[in-house]
Image (cartoon, rainbow, N blue to C red; front, side, top):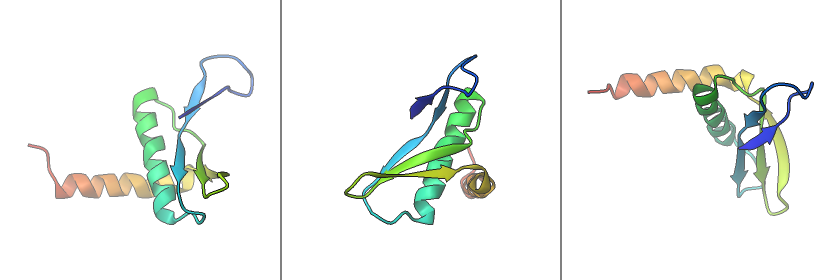
Length: 88
């Protein structure tokens, strides 16, 4: 997680997930896992980050990932897991 200040510099700081991946090539799975982390952060703080970061490869390159296009798919996967494994 990385603390970021909002553009106006007022109010509470926000946070974005940061994930480290060993491989040079980022997969859809990596992006979905990062989006799941953003979803969990939203559950705790009440704010879904717009983007998150993956640091990857031997050179520690950084890729910014937009969360919104993937959050629906992540929520669908969570619902599917909950349906397959009901509580209680």
